[in-house]
Length: 77
Image (tube, rainbow, N blue to C red):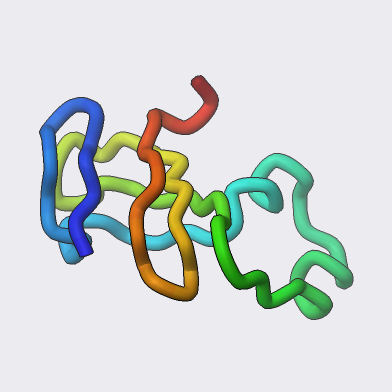
C-alpha cells in the first residue's frame, strides 16, 4: 500500500505508523472506545504518522476491505 504524504509525495506505507481511528483520537479514551469498538468494512478514517519522513500526522480514508486509499490529508485541517 502507498500513501501520498501532502509534504513528501507518494511513499510506501512502511514509512508510516498507524495510530488508530481518526474519530476516536478527538474523543478521548473510555471503556467503550477501548474495548467495544466496531469493526467497520468499507471506507474508514484513520490516523497515520509519517515517522520516516516529515513526521506529519495524516488523516487517511481507506477502504479497509480492499486497502484502497481514498484520500490523504493533514490531520486537523
